[in-house]
Amino acid sequence: MQIINFTAYTNDTSQIEAIKAFMKALKIKFEVSKSKPYSHEFTEKLKESQQQFKNGKCSTITLDDIWKKD
Image (cartoon, rainbow, N blue to C red):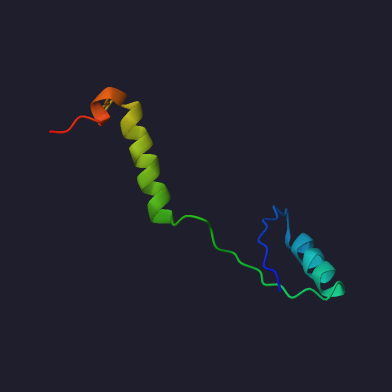
């Protein structure tokens, strides 16, 4: 058995049911997952970080300084 993952961007539940019917007609075992790739907490932290960057609350380092040892 080979496992593949795909994402379907459906407009309504009838499309989801059509996909399920198609998979059943082909006798393919499947499961429907409604999970998001990232947690809400993580995405909120990312948005906050992006806003801080836009507000200039960040620091930069040059490539040369990355490799310097203290």
